[in-house]
Image 1 (cartoon, rainbow, N blue to C red):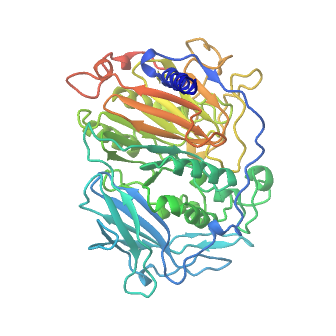
Image 2 (image 1 turned 90 degrees about the vertical axis):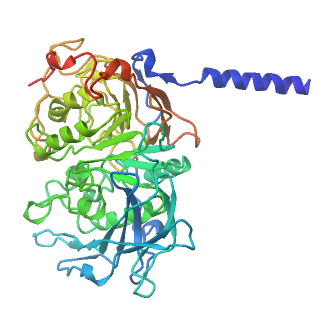
Length: 548
């Protein structure tokens, strides 16, 4: 009977596995789901500067905050690190970046680092011209590009300055992306947003690392250094705590170093691609912005022809990735839009079938926070991306998880993109829990003053179930699933048409998913045979929900 019992248990397990086959976008739009808030999770608490994970362990000129990033093609990659110590004070004297060389030794085995590449070094400062505020100047930041690499190959490397004693790192290793082509794909791509550096962040990163990603996409809002004054005092809401009392939005730049130290265990072995969020703006003297963001990360800006840290593209196997700037000019007459047109025109979908984009602020969020905030970006860019058959758009900004049905111009469309917002990385700001469609919670359609969001294009809907109103009175049809929980997502592209998306909640067991779906491309239906980029049904002459 014991054997029979095992047999029936195995049958049950098999049946459960069959029943649990994830849904697919092929079956059309799914009925909107809202997962009710289980319990208030309290607020996320930042790691203090006494936490050993954020303290400086490097001595002398030894490298720290080591990170790998991709170039535009799998045959090249970037290695970045920092040497020397930052300074904080009323007057700071920047280090000379020429003090230490920028060298990476690498090869196919840990004891055979036979190749060598050199790169550039820089320092940046965050300066506040006000009495009593502290200034910051960074350690020396190094960026070295490795070229002529084999795709899908594990490389061992150490970085630093071989001419100085104790100035080379330990040996690390990373794997290059698969060769560009329709039949090779990275195994697992982790997508995360609005991380910060809280105890919740560390849970997100632990869960993410346990899924052994081949690549990490961080869709903006990195370390939240701008939740602090320059004296190191922080708050969960900057404007509430400090807004009235300080002449400029301050930051505590050492939080960037803490974040780089904490993340090194992941970033030194797994390539990570970052695009800016609003928390990276960090205004300083002379209206200068984004100094930390543009100095600390390596971007394939030159290689992808964007020549900008705010938007760029890269290929990994059969995927063409677009990282777009929600805080750079995205108007149709601007440089980003012109670059995007040129970049998309070069994409050959028989070589890279998948077109995946990432940017910070979502176009289709149904939460009250940031509801329709970047409508101008959607009005400017959505038609272009749709006409080239964008498959998936990843965003953050709203501190919750939400996945859309295939949508274009607020209309369910089998050739529209799936929009997935993963702004639930765990930062110290409040989690988004209120939906714009709840009674009494529809925000005002008036613009919020924000120089970085360039105007306000949202007004009442002119068609559909919400015609004449700014919000729906129920979860909109274009929203498939929404839940206020911390977590991260994993995209597994299986072949030219099928990709499995799984969202993992921090409160769940490692390996289990809160939301999962097969995202299935239909190129025969959505892309013309002759031109691999136009949609088969010319939607672009229909009237647009411009809300203008």
